[in-house]
Amino acid sequence: MTDQQLTVGQAGEDAVLAAVREVIDPFNAQRPGLALGPGDDAAALTLGSGQAVITTDTMSEGQDFRRQWWLDPESLGAAEFEPAEEWPQDVGTKAAAQNLSDINAMGAVPTALVVSLTLPPQTTVAWVANFYRGVLRACEAPGAGRCVVAGGDFGAGEAISVTITALGEPAAGGQLLRRDRAEPGDVLAVCGQLGRAAAGLALLERPGEASVSSDELRHWQDHAAIIRECLQAQQQPQPPLNAGPAALAAGASAGLDLSDGLLRDAGRLAAASRVQIRCDDAALAAEAQPLKPVAGILGLGPAAGSEWVLSGGEDYSLLATFPADAPLPDGFRALGTVEPVPADGQPGVLVAAEPSGTGWDSLRQIL
Ligand SMILES: Nc1ncnc2c1ncn2[C@@H]1O[C@H](COP(=O)(O)OP(=O)(O)OP(=O)(O)O)[C@@H](O)[C@H]1O
Ligand SMILES: Cc1ncc(C[n+]2csc(CCOP(=O)(O)O)c2C)c(N)n1
Ligand SMILES: [Mg+2]
Image (cartoon, rainbow, N blue to C red; front, side, top):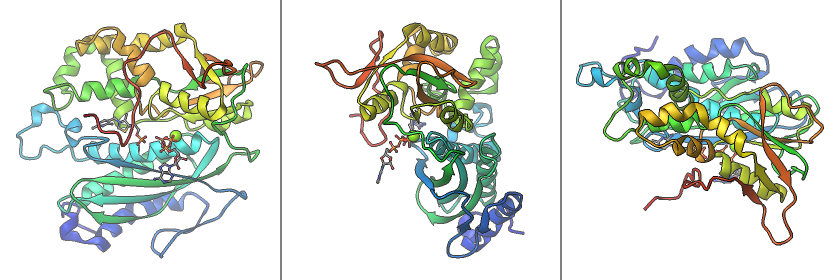
């Protein structure tokens, strides 16, 4: 057994892979579908249908998470200040979840993940093993019961970076939930949270604070439930992985997952489908209402809740459009309607509130 306290720089690739295999092999063995698992030049999967659905997403330290988020400031300065398990597990869960969410958003079922990790040499073997435990935790979610970890790659670098590629296949029926098929007259609906991950990000990134301490959580105990929900949405998201196939089964015309903010992503659906989306302002206000205490704690006005709902990213909820006569599947809430583009207009999203943010852009630099 590889010494878990060694750094990856000391242990080397073969020993790190051996430690990872101890975590993933027993998990993979319980799931059918992996004809040849990690260990050869490539893996082989047994396909149930004629189509593979494939997506990839990268998450990097400093851009998508900070290790300080998992530090209780009380423990800063202590010799062993790194939370040994939560940090790597949460990074693994989030990296897997955002890929599983994209498979779900195609109305498909995830079958395999391929995991590429760039690691600073001082990262411990224990960190890597716990990261994979987090990846597997995401695959334990309802809807991901067939997903295995088929392989990956290790590289060294200055900051931690994770790229996961997810494979899936269309759910029963063989259709895909595309973003370019919404029709005027459809209802716009969402399954999963809105604005929680952005509120969690705002809590974690409070100016001058390294993270949210257990003391603060005690101090804010009246709002502990919503605070924990927001932190969890940001640090270990749980996308509704049955929602894509359920939406298709219910007759959904189009859909995508919300990674970059409701307005931005709904705008993508509107542009792809060449329609106008009119949001129901009362429905949006109801989504923002539970976030008001979080805005209060942060010293922000009540508009912050709406801003998180409209422009906050990383909720990994499923936004879909349904014909008006189709009953919404369990967990979906109506948010608006789909209209034709006016003769003098452009595809887009209409809301009463004018948001100040424009959603998330992975490349644009804020100068
Ligand atoms: N570097 C790239 N090379 C080729 N295609 C790309 C590249 N980056 C993005 N794309 C394609 O552009 C489309 C949109 O990419 P994006 O990452 O924004 O996906 P999304 O589903 O809209 O967002 P998210 O991945 O955050 O859920 C996808 O079909 C993706 O495959
Ligand atoms: C340190 C830090 N700064 C900012 C953010 C916010 N953030 C990062 S990626 C993303 C959208 C999805 O990205 P992609 O489209 O690349 O999948 C958002 C809203 C964060 N999580 N951590
Ligand atoms: Mg997506």
